[in-house]
Length: 156
Image (tube, rainbow, N blue to C red; front, top):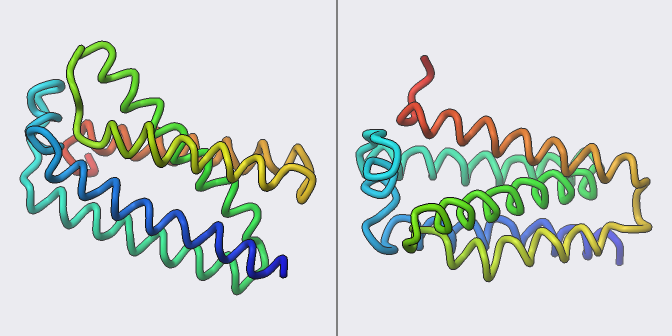
């Protein structure tokens, strides 16, 4: 039963990723135009889609590997930290911009609750230290992706 629960929680992340991507691409002005308006970062729609596809593939691979090598709870904690951080980032940006930003609704209504619920699910199933380390790794990954995005999706 525990394997099913872990697989179920892991499956929610790629599913929610698709919803978040759809909103970022088609919501408002679209994320590439939004990024250019806010930060002056030029990213084509094609580059955005390619990078999102790579992110989605990486997420699927991470989930499969974590199940195969028996660390699904750590992966759930990492992904929880990632989606919460992304949601907070979208929210803070929208507050400062005083406008809707693509991805905001999925962040507020889906990713932040999913991250919080996943962490709640994990409490008592793994050590607090391991849970904190996993969430911190997720936060760091989101931060690294944010820096990459600000550079227009280029490694410099």
